[in-house]
Length: 633
Image 1 (cartoon, helix red, strand yellow):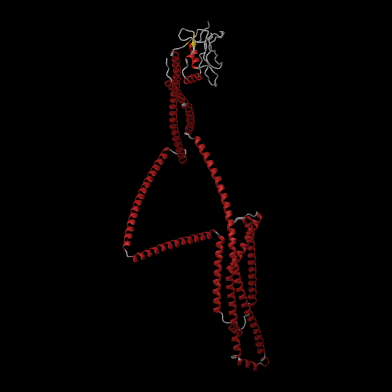
Image 2 (tube, helix red, strand yellow; image 1 turned 90 degrees about the horizontal axis):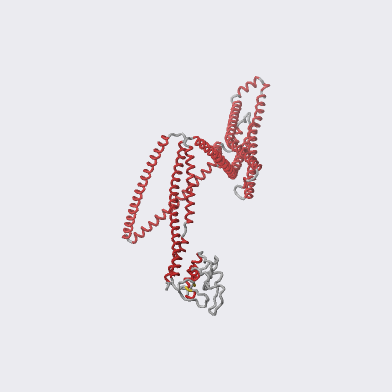
């Protein structure tokens, strides 16, 4: 007789629970059998052995395995869900429990008919689930406690951060005080400065509060004024409504005219402001640009010269008589004795100087035009206003030399134009003096001739009577002298005509020189613009260089001050304490960061919401199954 299997193994087999491979679905095994393995076949119901992959072990002498897995529990729950086992599927036993004999078997096995076995198995599994749930709840509570500790640590970390921030602010304030007061400043002076700063802050705060109160008062007054204006407007509207239609139309017309005048006044004020701005800009440009200022001065000088020339011409026209009168006067007077050749030489030299200056002015104008053409070509090739300054160094030097030559010629012309009126006045004065001298000599000669022809007749006759051989000598000498004087007078007449022609030529050359000077002033504007542009670029380049040098100097100065300050701080008695405070601050920051990381890690570990949900769902399923499938005896 074989040893029967245990009740637990039969119960597990009856419940459909068996040891199965992990990951494979659990199938319901066949009905277990405790008959002999070598018994003969009977004529009853054919028996089938359980599958190798599931079900309880057959009736052998070995004890059944009691190892359980979570998959078995789930399989048991699934078996319960499938229904209560039929009496034919209940396990067999050879013990004296009582029951029905298994039909079709050769052995005397019995089936379990009571439900206590199943209830005990169910209670056992339920107790296991309760224990597992309790363990999970304990773990959840422990994790919650850890989470609370993590929250406290996080709160402490926040407090430490606030303390660190306060310490940083205090350190910054102390550094500012050290920078301003110095390392060796006494504490009393620092405290005095602190009190003074607090008093200044209080005064400024009081002043700001007073200004705010004044502003509020002004705003209240403005609101009252606006309300008053609104009342007045309403009263005016009401009064206007009571007026006759004609007066109302006249009032509206006057109102429209008033609005139009206001708009016109605003437009005129805007135009006046624009004109003022343009005048200010022009004055500023004139003050900044020496070339334009020089051009304006030259124009003023030319205008003054023109005015002086007109005044002198008018005075000369008033002073001199007609040519007929001048000719008659010259014919009736003797010529001067000397000075005519010198005057002719001076006039010729002045004419040559004027011709030379006119030629130089024309050459200068041509050179300026050529420079302008080259500048325009360079600007067109460069693609912008700064293209003219993109030439190489040699062209720039050549242009600068040419510009200096032009400036020298301009100064020479200006000096000549400035000195020309004085020289002309000197020449005219010299000519007038010589003319007066000639007139005086002619008058003196005329008086001598008149005296010799009238009063001196008697002495002449006496002398003729005394000396007959000499009576014809004075007459011959007078005739020779008269012929010489007539020749000199003819020369003087020709010289006067020549002087008049030379003066007219001088006037024409002066007008031509003034016209050339005007053209040069116009060309000087373009030249001044190019010079201003070049000067602006040079100034910008110099400004950039100065800024770079200033930045380097400031950087070196800051570096030097920083090094000096570090050296002073390193020798200060409070430096070790400050160094330790900084190290302590760094360690506190590291600890705070580590605490935050630990809090985050523990929070991630304490996230058992999924496991709790699974446990709760499993418990709810078991309870539902117990309520839906009650056990009957």
